[in-house]
Length: 137
Image 1 (cartoon, rainbow, N blue to C red):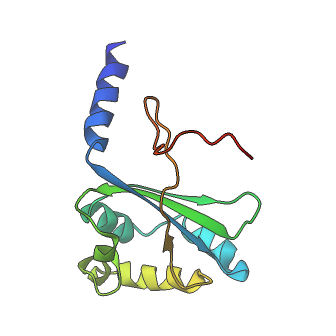
Image 2 (tube, helix red, strand yellow; image 1 turned 90 degrees about the vertical axis):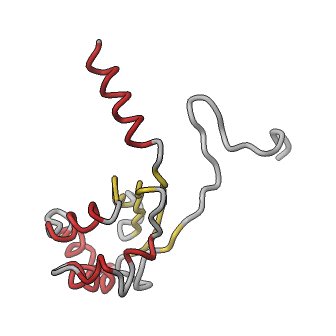
């Protein structure tokens, strides 16, 4: 019983000062299998670079219905701005990282990821409601 409590506190302390971001993109249909293959073996220089510059968690989701539609969920240091990882950044100047990012961008229909904004959040204690419930349809 003590171990889960300690792990929960440790996780809570790690996550309480993180910013969360969701991004969306579409991969060119003919490039999808290559994109997925690359992400089964992400280059270590990319992973270490993302960690160094403040990425704490990064998960890419693939739509079950629209196979080439992807969402990326990121938890990062609260003071990190995604532009700090963009073209011309110190992150992309690292060996192999710029090559990886250019290759990945070439797989996307629009050439990049699009940042999404939250619409609604529910936690175990609260929600992001700002108005009274609307029961009319």
